[in-house]
Image 1 (cartoon, rainbow, N blue to C red):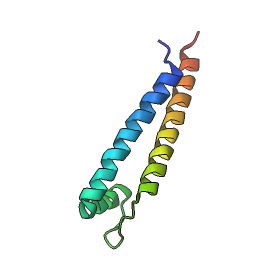
Image 2: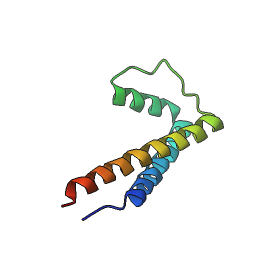
Image 3: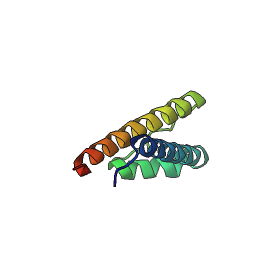
Image 4: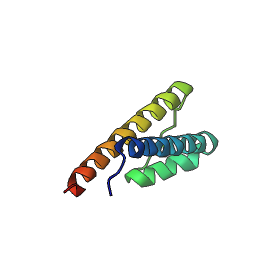
Length: 86
């Protein structure tokens, strides 16, 4: 079975966008807990730092994560298709 490279890339971009929006909402609503969770994920103590997420940072981050995830997924689908073709 071959994957549609464009659709697979778009699905990843949409999923990354949704994740970014949810994550940004959590940072806005619960900054302390979000900072601790971020520290746990990177094995660091980030409690002395503060989040700084303005509208520009939100939009740029959303675009960059969506674009990166989409390109990575499309490349993965293309490689997969190449590997499964006879």
